[in-house]
Length: 355
Image (cartoon, rainbow, N blue to C red):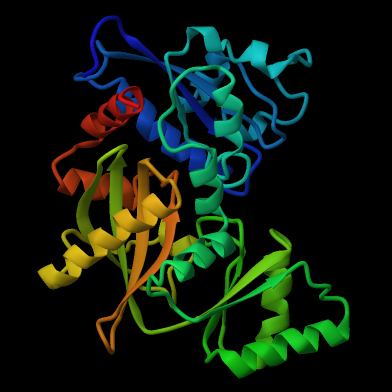
C-alpha cells in the first residue's frame, strides 16, 4: 500500500514522436487524476514535457502546458524559454522524483527508450521494462512471437528494408501480396501507434502508395489481411499477477478504426462487450498469455478481433502505454471494472512500488 510521505510522481509527456499531441492529452488526464480530492494528500506531480525536437522543459513550464497556460505549439527549438543547452539529466531533477510515470506514446517512449534512460535514475516506474516495451511497439517482432506461441492471428506478410525505388523489388512485393493475401489488406509500419501510417488497400493499384506511406515511418512493413471483424479490447494491470478488465468493444462509423475514428469521432463504446462468457474468458486468457510472452506488465491494453462470420478470436496487438485521453478505451475499461481514473492512477503507482 501507498503510505508515509507524499509520493512525487515524475510525469513525462510530449516527446519526439508522431503521437506527441496524444501524449499531451493523456498527461492532462493523468495530471488531473493525481490532483483529485482523493489523491492530493498522497501524491505531488512533477511534470516534464519533451518538445517535438526532443528538448526537455523544466517542471514549472511543463506544468503550464498541462494547465493550458502555455500552448505546446510554441515550444519550438530554442523556443520561448531561452533555456541554455543543458544536460537533460540535470534538468529533470530526478533526485526529487519517487516514481516515474512515462506517458510518451510512440517513438522514443513506448518503444522502451525512456525506460532504459529512467533505469539509470534507480527509481521505480509505472509500466513495463525495456524488453516488453520494445516488443510491444514492434509489430513484426510481436507477431512473430505470437506465431511461435500459435496464438490465432490474421494472415500477414513481412517486408523489411526493401528498396521501393527498384521496380523489380516493387513488383516482387506486389506479386507476393496478390498471391498470399486476399483484399482488402492493411499496410502498416512495424513501429507506430494510433493507426498512423496505416492504409487500407482494396485493390492492386493502391498497394505501392500504401507501402510508401508506411515506409515514411518505418522501413519494416507489415501487411495484414483484412477481415469483417469486431474490435475488442482488454485492459491489463499487475506484476507477478496480471489482472484483466472487463472486455470492451468499439463500434465505429468510419470504414475502419483509423486515427480520426480513434480520437475525433463519436464511436460507440460497449463495456462489457456483448459476447459469450466463454469467448470473454478465452480473450482474457490470451491477453495474459501474450503479455507474459513479451514480458509486459504494469499496465497495457490488448487488442483483439472477433471475426463476424465465424466468431473466431484473433489477437491483434498489445499497447504498453495506452492512451488516457477522453476517448481512450483503457481508463474506460477499468472504470467499468470498478476503478475510476483517480483510483486507477494510484493503483498503477502502487503496482510499480510492489515490484
